[in-house]
Image 1 (spheres, rainbow, N blue to C red):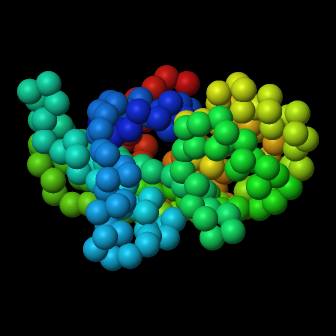
Image 2: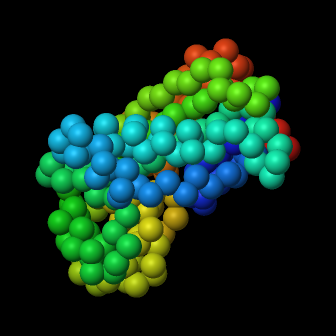
Amino acid sequence: MRLYLASTSPARLALLRTAGVEPVVVPSYVDEPAAVAAAEADHGPLDAHTMVQLLARLKAEAVRGTRDGEPLDGLILGGDSAFAIDGAIHGKPHLPEVARERWLQQRGRTGVLYSGHWLIDHRDGRENAAAGAVAAASVTFADLTDDEIDAYVASGEPLEVAGAFTIDSLGGPFITRVEGDPSTVVGLSLSTLRGLVRKLGVEWTSLWNRAW
């Protein structure tokens, strides 16, 4: 069974690989800010839970159909993540000054990382069914020094990840506690994904296609 990953996230790809799954990466190119703005224009401000589920769904739906002239035959996965603290939603900071400001705010404190999942059963080249779910994990940070924050921001790693941190790379030592599925913090809850796969009538182990 093929799994198509509608994401270019290196972290999600690496996580699936460690779980024995080599997905086919199919970038979705969804304009995330525009999609959120459109949804908020219709329904008002989105909370983090609603936002990540919306974007995960749009990413998966954006790649339905064909790839290189061939119909996608398997499962399509869309994912999105956001970090919430003090009622504010933090996606990717992009800019060093934004990442630094966020770390000054969140050091020594706890927030929640939300990871949205949307899975489409696209066997035989058409959408047969779909299911989605959001996983959440609380993350507690060490009380970093200003020098540690500056060094971490200068590494470039926090600029393109939700919440300006990782757990599986340079940011790992700055996290003191995680409550929930740890893979959620990477950007994809493996246990949640397994549940969705089984909900669509597919055995998780049928996705295994990597040697270990």
